[in-house]
Length: 84
Image (cartoon, rainbow, N blue to C red; front, side, top):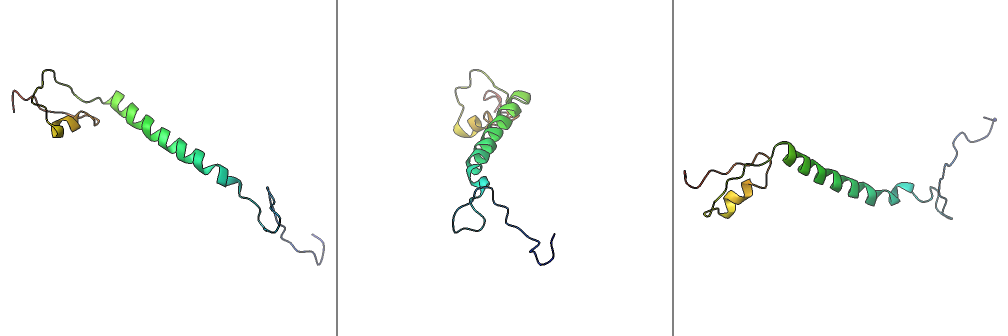
């Protein structure tokens, strides 16, 4: 550093005239980050269901909406309607 020279300098990767900092490179990355987080969440759900699948019973004619929700969760268990 030379005497009398300012020690700080502007580091601008994508300059825009009249704007000191230029365009932020992260602006283009935000949609990709959101997409990646959504896909990772979908894969987590799918992998969880493969590792710990819900239990399914056959011939459940009296299956209502609340009991059906159990089949959509990890380790979901619905009691057999014959034993209800």
